[in-house]
Amino acid sequence: MFDLWFGVSGAEADVISTVEFNQTGDLLATGDKGGRVVIFQRETEVSVGETGDSGEYNVYSTFQSHEPDFDYLKSLEIEEKINKIRWLPQQNAAHFLLSTNDKTIKLWKVSERDKRPEGYNLKDEEGRFKDISTITSLQVPVLKPTDLMVEVRPRRVFSNGHTYHVNSISVNSDGETYLSADDLRINMWHLGITDRSFNIVDIKPANMEDLTEVITASEFHPHHCHLFVYSSSKGTLRLCDMRASALCDKHTKLFEEPEDPGSRSFFSEIISSVSDVKFSHSGRYLLTRDYLTAKVWDLNMDKGPVETYQVHEYLRSKLCSLYENDCIFDKFECVWNSSDSVIMTGAYNSFFRMFDRETGRGVTLEAWRESSKPRAVLRTRRVYTGGKRRRGDVGVDSLDFTKKILHMAWHPSENIIAIAATNNLYIFQDRVNPETQ
Image (cartoon, rainbow, N blue to C red):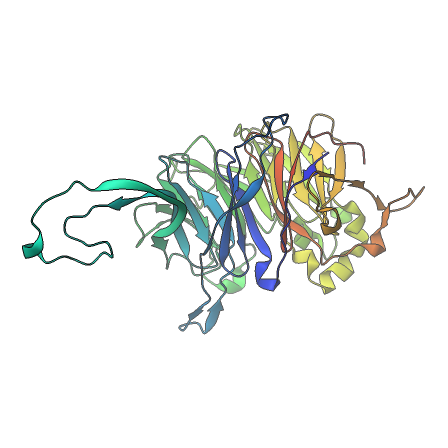
């Protein structure tokens, strides 16, 4: 089970739109619809009698990453909403992260200052330049301790690279480049060059009336800098190798699950669209999420997924009403735990699902504000679909579709998860032990 650590709430602009741990897990960044980025830091102090895995996350820094903009050529408003945040591998005392809205990607430097210089020769205490003729002696400037300050500064602004909305950014394992993907194109950028990028995938047809699919997500391989994968609205995955061709319109491997003609319906194409794709930490597997299921694919087997997990199959009978209220277009994310043995993804009614890959068993957990006391224990939940009804079961018709968990992150080395439930952030920790659902 998991212990609840932290919860925040706010207005519509505070609805969390992305969550991301850094490589050590000591920092956690969230972005919201208001264009703000909030960074949480894990406390390292451990009280007597507590285990070493303690240490709460507290607010470390908050800054405005993006502002609302307007494209005058297209008469189009550009939202300030943060679509993705990605941390760069740490090279020194400072931290760097990329954040993006629909059009513009920014590189931010996060650093600490706990000392200030004193004893300038050419400036007075207020920073004004002295009259050189009044300087009769020289002194050596010294650094004196001061209150800790966290500085966040923009280092690069990568703009004008995308015509359509950016849905993914992914930092390459070489630490020098990253990719950004929109509905029809994927670009590769060098972190030091802002005025140009290299287009590596372009699926835009000559006539837009011939458009049949769009790119939904993309990610670099965690170890091989020449490999990346992207998913499409048709439920397919394409693995591309930049060694084979500079323009990767022709994929190296196509991962696709054959459709059962007998189960085809009006909603088949919508619910088969892949909303998220993640490489496993080992680089051997791919984890994808469509509307009803989460799937694990082996890079060596492109005929179909090796594992399929039903997230909320009970919604299949509700697809018509979900289409009418637009919930069927919700884009759920999925994540791996540090050992690639457990996967996690979100659902409705503030529920999220975890699956143990070894046993295939899953558990439904709930993140709700009424239990947001420190060290509170999460309850397992069950959606009632028929048969014997147990106490605490939630009926399908009673589900709240406004309370959806779309965004989440898993600590890179420990069993700590961050869950974004609309405008609330929950952080849980403990041992993973999915039970039969």
